[in-house]
Image (cartoon, rainbow, N blue to C red; front, side):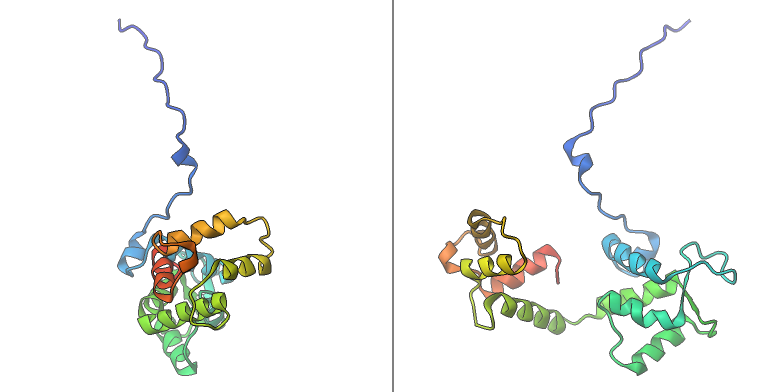
Length: 195
């Protein structure tokens, strides 16, 4: 007879287990060359418009109506350039004109549009954001600019120490007075995955 052994102790949950988990990349995300986070965002927007449909019993994510595709793409920040592009998209994802679009074809189109965002367009967005911080000047972003933005966003609890740390993080540890140049702002936006 084997003596009964006490159950193994489970270790206490670590601090890292309470951190938000990164979205896993599904097979569909891999096929469309997007990250798990990008897929999660696409799925979230799809679910805003989706509904179950008896004609598509195997579509566990539901389907969206053809006329909601444009709205969903706009919600993702990926609007069709014009009506011609929209028609091209609709004919690709609803080739038999059922009036409904399943998740997989919608994800494929959204992923393609994500990948096709040009470097020029992203650079223009970063430049526009930089201009918001500097009120249209050539920069750099100063401590005063960050104070103003914090006030405008009603983030009065953000102290100067944090704002100074933000500047030093963005400018690679230079001085607070040096501020943040456009190039440094672009780098930090890319590192943060904003653009």
